[in-house]
Length: 248
Image (cartoon, rainbow, N blue to C red):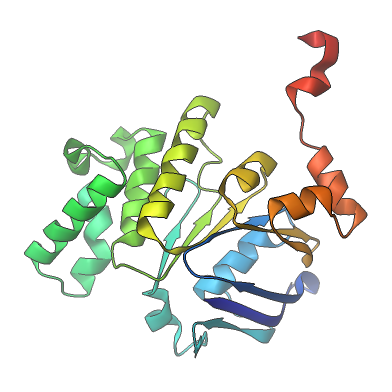
């Protein structure tokens, strides 16, 4: 479980997060939703311990995130960037196993874990020898998920992991990622600005606006029981085929 208690954060006197109070249950997928500049990516980095709050605290289970505990707690979390964040000079296998090698895992332990995860993400073993520039967008993200899950963390964090993919690959990978999350049985927190993606993945959805939590609950609650006019405005801003009228 992750708990966020009264967190505030400012950059250059601009308030980015304002009195954030949230909790995220284990083995569920939680979505941080909002427009650009709403604070969602900053909050994700704060959960990872990459940014410290000005006020308030973040807890992983019963452990508080502090500068002294960050390194240990970060090993209990996996982090996936939008483009995968793979090191270009390392092949896929080296990227996946990097942290385990740093921590002194044996070659056999690493191979066993690779064999486990490659089945979970449905990746061909031949991909492991390729460098990031040789991978498709979908392959990069599968490799990034393997790397994030390699140490068997309690939490997996994803910052708009599908934003850079074309629509067909994105749709296919959405289905595969949801299946992967179900197999891994981890607490997943994903950042997105896409309403359809939030509805597809989220057991809970948190809508952020100007650094504040406007609503936290199921997508159905956001849709049918909005607690602020902006919630409805944000949801209705998503274009659909119906909006195109006589253009189709």
